[in-house]
Image (cartoon, rainbow over all chains, first blue to last red; front, side, top):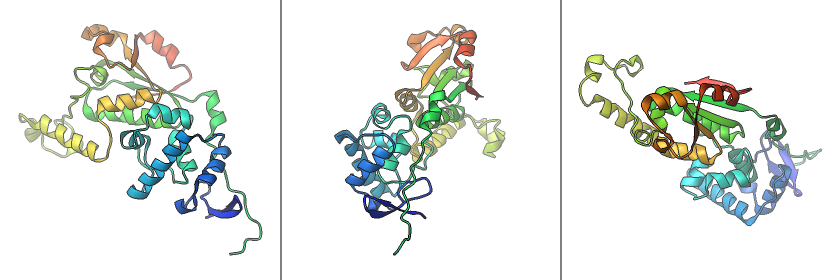
Length: 104
Length: 172
């Protein structure tokens, strides 16, 4: 498992660059992860990220878009605007989570 | 821990540029049973989540999926389906379709997968395009008013050819 240096500290990531240890994440790091993929974080992005992280911590897996809407109350359409084209993958990357594994 | 050369974190590519060229997926949904509605809906939703342009063309019995009267009431018929490993003599008895439908719906719900109308909402909100077949609509005497609101139009086979140009097409 690669160890990368970001913001002057060691961060564990997988081959693609997704964090493997969610506890190494903080909101400052999110800013850099978002910049990496061309997204500038707004307050609304942070609301999404916080929910995704809390839910993942509770459920043991990254929420799917459906869950983000059904449980988190974030409309799918909005998630596509905040994290263009590949919302599920992009938001998990910025949130320091693994990609969702479910089909739906 | 000492690392001689601290590495830079890899950045997922997400293939954003590639998408500009436009991967496009067309699904033809021609069946009206509960078990045959899901493959198209699941694939459409997955493709949308990958930034792929998606069109679903509903034709013949596939109209059951977008007909407001039937979309929430699709059935699973076990009779004549060897994959259920149930004897036809039993599955042909009255009430068996209702029972097998109920069982399948429960299995789907247990996986936290939405029912058909909600699934269509999800696809529609994710930017998927829904189309209905002209000939089927005429045969069944249905108009756009009878169909799910997200359906963008009733189109002919010729329109479909234009729509599917350059797309990967899957017939279900």
